[in-house]
Length: 359
Image (cartoon, rainbow, N blue to C red; front, side, top):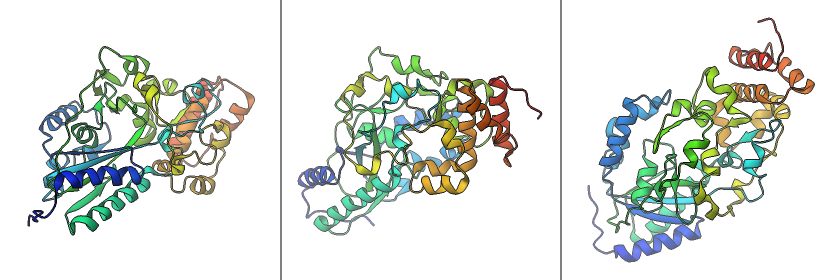
């Protein structure tokens, strides 16, 4: 049943929401309608090309992903919010890629799991709204349901989708998380953001695996973030050398984006690096047993890939490291691991290091 909000001033409420959002740690909030027809066509074409790889969840739920009112009946607006995450004290991201003995973890995953942080803040925002308008319909999303968060944020004026398919804000770059409140509140909508990539193709040219197959078009099957996080099985041999020391995600396209010169380090303590993951050695991480891994990834987004894939990814990175006795020793230590997946990648790395082993 559609609620009546005749007693509220939508313009004043929207201003309050923006203020509350800032108080809760969001750098920006915006409001969009629920017409995602253009994004729906783009998603359909992307899926038709099989660019989703093993991310079968992108095909589930029918049109609920592109039609918010079907996912949450009664939804007429989406409040989109962004929160900066680039850690102030982390080792230089670009420089880290030049140290092949160290592990590169995507900057977003160095601290506490962002899902938990943003979800809590968005629920707090909804509580503030409810205290003002009374009961209203809403549902919180943080990269955890069939939601087209980037097209929604673009419509809400938070930024534009760049050629690397990440959202870019002209005043803040792209190092930020997104979260949404689906709601039945008749709020004024913001003007959509316009694009400012121009003729720049830095992100396209820097991609180690040529995953950005055309401007604004990503073949996830080639993307290192997909290969190290989403892919459950064997990493295709053709991409292993290009992975370098990246063991969880990849930030290259963001590192080179000129708009990120405007990015500000986060003030959120939750996103500060944990357990030295911004500069840990590959060998050290490869030697973690499962109990240690579980303890040190507690409350982290990294936990989702599981211990086996963690070892798989590091094994590849060690194969790409400069040959040393310590690297060979670390790899040989897992050459007979109980996981066939790990063993396969260890053997590849040993062969790349010039070692001959009995398979």
